[in-house]
Image (cartoon, rainbow, N blue to C red; front, side, top):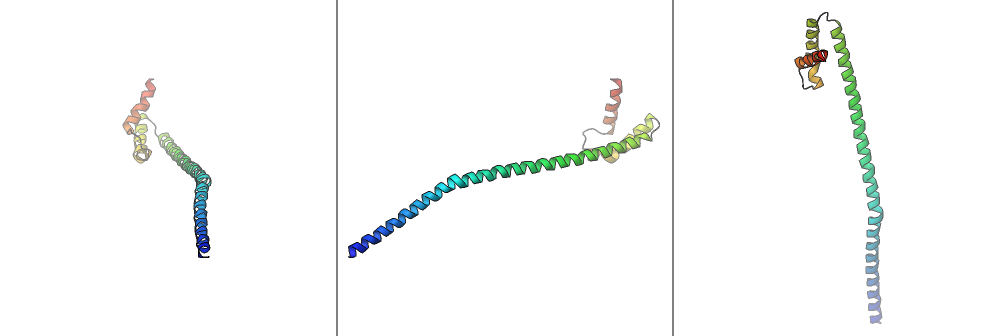
Length: 123
């Protein structure tokens, strides 16, 4: 009888091992097939969402920059409108540059821009 109980215990133990091993294999397969695909899906969506968000931020910044440039250009037009000769025109331009050129982050200074503009007259 004891050998039968021992056999039964061993059988139950083996059955438990097989179940654990089987569950381990099933879980591994589920992880590989379903979760990896789900994670890839999340990765693709996260990547797309991130790129779209940054693109929108850049577009917003470009829009704000364009508005800022348009405002500065309008101010330049207004200040130059009051000049009556070339000397006053240059002084007005230099005044505008002193107030706005740093914000524009240009490589040229007021004199360089003045010279470049007048060089167009020679073309």
